[in-house]
Image (tube, rainbow, N blue to C red; front, side, top):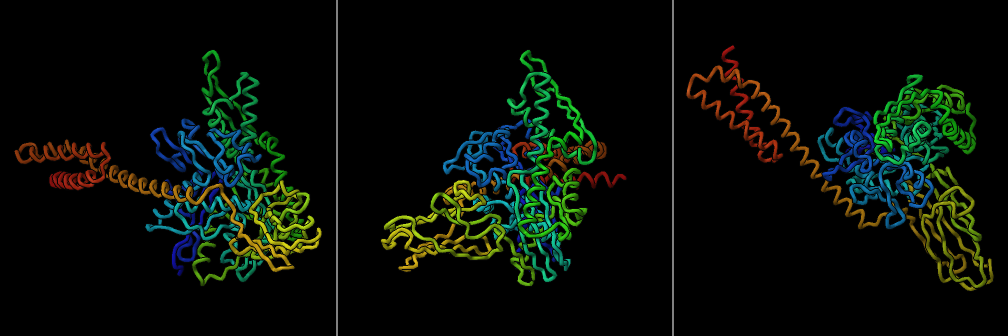
Length: 610
């Protein structure tokens, strides 16, 4: 048996999901509404109350400026990056530049970091699991897109920490899906996982071995390509059509934009099962003459396919390149797994089937398999009896900056981790006594196009002509994906090293403060849930007593004792109503006892006359 429970969380762009392995069986945990996925949405109300999930989504239109969706597209990114500029141009909520060149989201005049917003969703997943299991949960395995860089992964770890979770492993979403597919099935297959979700696209090729070995051969993707982009194409079309008709740009109105977003997403989903659907948004905006305008358009499946053709083709191009990197042909892929909500779109299903020349597998649930795979990994990490080995790869090349601003790769993309590589470089200047090592991650040959992970300086080099001092640089990646870099002067043995700690754009103090705030919110939420439960119980008893009042009065009103009992019962109900209004937990608990006694007495009186 596993020594402690570890949950698996799929922190998605559009929806999130949580799972656990119980008695050897991976299980998705439903939320209180019975849904197996929860919208990755966060809102703050006018009263300052925080809302997460379905309740946040339900009020998104009336509170558009203070409702956050698709925060995952911003996590671990720099404020000036093209992706951030693109995302904030189409969002209804306000963003500002943070103190560390990161992104901050403004809700009700308060600034939140992106990991803090993601932590609210992770905390919701934790609460769902704790309510289901009836015990506290401290550890989790959280999934990320395979193509996330180190900063995005670290930001996700920080989000887990803020949510009060120890993230014992970060694993790639396609790898998690493959674990869910192959776990306990004793398979021996080469599979491709095509993962097209709300915000990101990944493709991974894996070998699943009979002895429980899951080996990733190659992975690639685009962390800014997903269902959100297809929604954006539909929104653009609706905006243009409306502008042609009325000369008004609906993007200038936040509430109209949120209604368009909801309608576009709904239409896209409906067109997976029907040939055409109507977008009908009455009173979308007022004209200059104070005349209410309506938007009513029919969208067909061919139109949706036409609007998103290039996006689907981009995913297939990435698949083609990944197969080439893996040195495999399509006929060597024995199974294709479809993961992510977008794979329900018929055009995507067809494109994948045409490219891989086989019908994709129905062996995994596109919305649930990633969380299930994460829970399997968590179970294997704490239960030593589990004979499962996961060999993943580094999704991006790692190296250093060389003279001329070029990127010299030491660990190529798709290298199995853990690994280490070393290379000898020579000094580039006469009498050079120090060398700066800039550690980079990415695929571009120009260093500035890649992500800077860290830097350090090796000093005390002997003075020598240009190119005569040899520096040995060693890169090492452990099983957790932690990168260490060492530089050594081969003449003197002088050495300097760095453990590359990716940054989410948050300091330790900020993370500690956010953890405290999240903990306070959880206590407040637990207490408010307790009040809500007591309030509902009191209201139920009040309703039942008031329903029985006429019958009981008729039966006992003839005696003084009976009239006195009725008066006492009315007083109990009145006191309970005051406690319900005040939402005072201690008083509610006290009144529930009195209500329960009164209800039993009333039921007894009625039963005697039957």
